Amino acid sequence: MNHNTPPHRTRVKFCGITRIEDALHAASIGVDAIGLVFYAKSPRHVSIDRARAIAEVLPAFVTCVGLFVNADYSEIREILNQVKIDLLQFHGDETAAECEQYDRPYIKAVRMCEGLDFVQITEAYRNASGLLLDTWEQNSFGGTGKSFDWSMVPNQSPLPIILAGGLNPDNIEQAIRITQPYAVDVSGGIESAKGIKDRDKMNAFIRGVNSATS
Image (cartoon, rainbow, N blue to C red; front, side):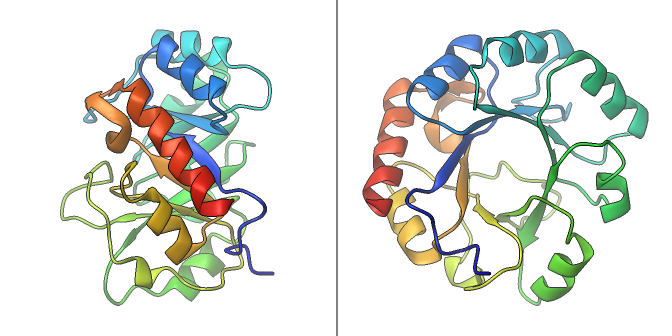
């Protein structure tokens, strides 16, 4: 099955949400998922209390995604016990076995670089709900604000492809037309400052997605 051929529309995740009002606006304009970053080194990191408050206001059918980078088992368990997380997103060097020990569906981030063995990755993480393709950068686990060469995105994949890395209202339509992903993930491209989403940019991004798949 070719998961890269989009259904009637491309799914959208807004990541790095830090404010309740941004989560509510995202939901109101049709975003499928919002991402909460539990990585202390990220400028979009949220505390457990803030994450819980955001998760509690999400309406039905908006997925709450928890993003982790090489986190300890106990840390993730503590967060899952306190925050309503629907889906886990692993952005570090986690093995498939590590990703699968929480009784939650998960997606695995793949930093795209030359020589990447995509077949090997899809086999290793075959139980994932999707692979998130992000930009490779030395000493960075995502959130670079830079895009990668979209020609590296495979035409066919046994797992749903989520396109990330440097997406914004200006390039999202082209990105979808070229890669035909199952979903797209944006953070910095819809912000006025790190962790602060801009409503006009959020709206423009959704318009671009809808235009690409209409």
